[in-house]
Length: 205
Image (cartoon, rainbow, N blue to C red; front, side, top):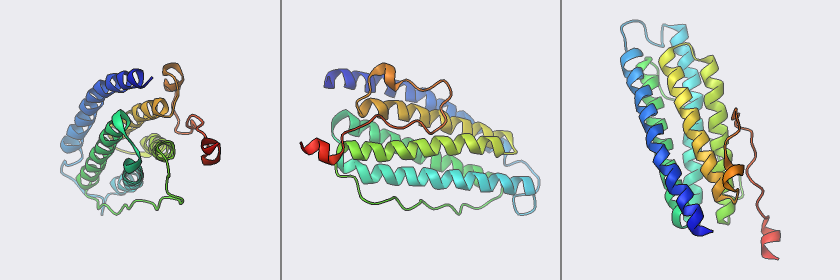
């Protein structure tokens, strides 16, 4: 079982290289497109609107990173390795969003939301916390892309959504879902619940 899960994780991790390529492409578009001559967010209402949307996405990415940092001490083996990689990719999202905001002439004012108590006490609870925040980040990226005015930030939002959808697939497997059950929905919306895991009381029986 552990060997099979490790192979699945390894295969999906290879696919993250493709996601990194698309994220890099989006970032290149941001550098070349958002920084063109013209008024910045202080005097351009459309750029200001995009900065506001991007700051909301940035806040969720920071919150997702905080969720991983809270749960990492409870993880072991290939699941720990994957979670560390996801946290690193979410940090790359933060960096890209920061550059996008500055490229529009705006300021970053986003902060991570406070995570709800209680703190996770098991690997399963840590994975559920990460899953819930990856779900929220996916939903935020999709919603944000519909409200962005400029093409470069929209490309970035789309790349973020794709990355979070991949993360959710692996987290489903880590939570015990089989390969077929972990496959993304045709239209991931960020509201697909995690696979059911035993409660603390059930696990202690």
